[in-house]
Amino acid sequence: MRTQTKLEKKRATRGQTPIFFEFFAGGGMARIGLGDRWRCAFANDFDPKKCAAYRANFGGKDLVETDIATLTLDDLPDVRPDLVWASFPCQDLSLAGARGGITASRSGAFFPFWRLVEGLIEDNRAPKLIVLENVAGLLTSNGGGDFAALAGLMTKRGYKVSTCVIDASQFTPQSRPRLFILGFGPGAGIPADTIAAQPPPALEAAIDALPPRVRRNVAPARTPHGPRSNIALKDIVDWNGGDWHPPAQTRKLIAMMNPQQRRRLKSLMNSGKPIAGTGFRRMRTEKGKTVQRFEARFDGLAGCLRTPAGGSSRQVLIAIENGKARTRLLNAREAARLMGLPDDYVLPENANAALKLCGDGVCPPVVQWLAAHILEPALFSVEARAAA
Image 1: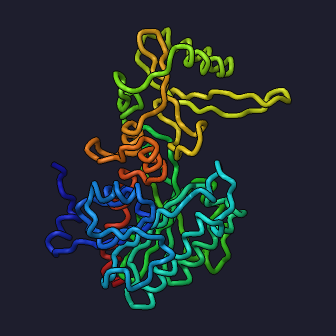
Image 2 (image 1 turned 90 degrees about the horizontal axis):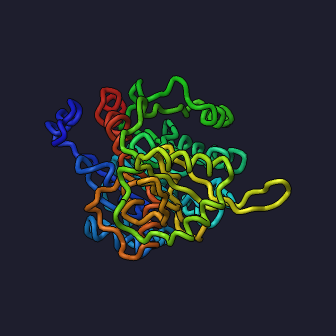
Image 3 (image 1 turned 90 degrees about the vertical axis):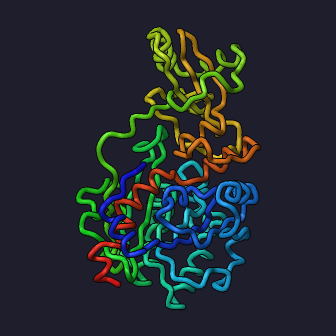
């Protein structure tokens, strides 16, 4: 059983249970990360399969399944939320996509969300905290204009903003950097140790490029430090299950590696140790010709999970054991483990739906860290009591 922190004991004594609204809720991964110390009063998503997974794991009492653009203030509970969380669509902001930006069709769903936040503010129910989560590419999309637009909207409404990039690899064996934009409003203080002394260069550059009136209310947030989790990819792999490729298909994938990677693979096979890696098929230009390569990694991490939109976006698992290599597609339960979901989390039965759920989600252990080290101190610290 997890021991309560001093802050949690103090909050429990006062009978304080923070309330949150979860927009673009997906399968409820932010809810898992926040845990039982928080109470969900409202959740929204429009994807039927994700909503079915949400209900399977949490029930449907708090969930409204509809396009966010159809919601009005009357659809929200008549309470002031301590936190509003929004993991809004990333497809138009990702470096892997066309990068249409925040005004494009999918990522543009942010604006109906913000209309609801402004409605809460006008109704004297301003959220104490706002968290926006998206891909790190948001920092540079539209030449930094999208990040400036979001920060500008928040600061204009009186929120102090702190922002950071956290890689899920600190907690799970998956390379998954994500941008978190944190808004601190009335009733939420910003403890001094929230601010990062030395932010990553890309984040520092994005903040420095903001208009002066916005920049003075934006600061980098600290991130987890120290060694990453000791859980490696091989620890979450189902070694005895799965639909393994025929040997000929595995040989074809290996032949698609560049010579250096094939030598690396041979060395690992000769080591006699069980090793797991993952790879993607990618198109590369070499000596003026376009060739398809299978690019693998064996550093104990999987590549960033994606939604299974096409064959090349499906991550291939490479399992090395007893001097031999086997390959197959990463399965849904393995993807869930890479996200930090417990094995009793109910996934959609359809594999593609389950992979989409995971690929679109936020990593719960990252949310848990943010809650414990930034969000909860912001609500219950001395600074918060002074801001209330």
